[in-house]
Image (cartoon, rainbow, N blue to C red; front, top):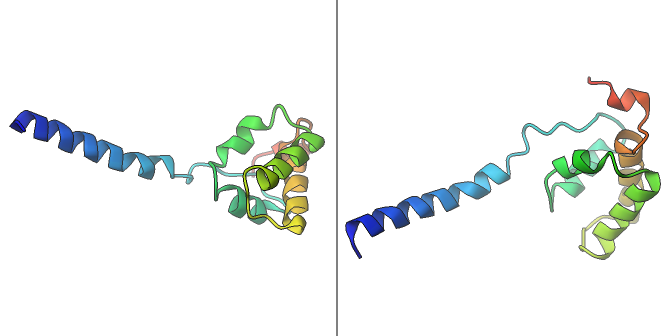
Length: 108
């Protein structure tokens, strides 16, 4: 292998190794405060970025969020208890539903 090829491979490996570190950074994502925040953060962040919640909020009402939580459990295998599922669905509908409560849209 030529010297140039070895350098290119090393740079590619370094870039690939850094991708997961960047993708896993959730430090800039702040969900709305409220009952169910802890359960939502800890359960949802196991599988995906929390920005999915914010991105989907314009499209989902309470029934939509309930369907999403149910799908995450039954289809995707999310390890969420029935009690926590109800807490999470209520939190999402209250704070990120298509018609969220006025206090949920006010920044802290």
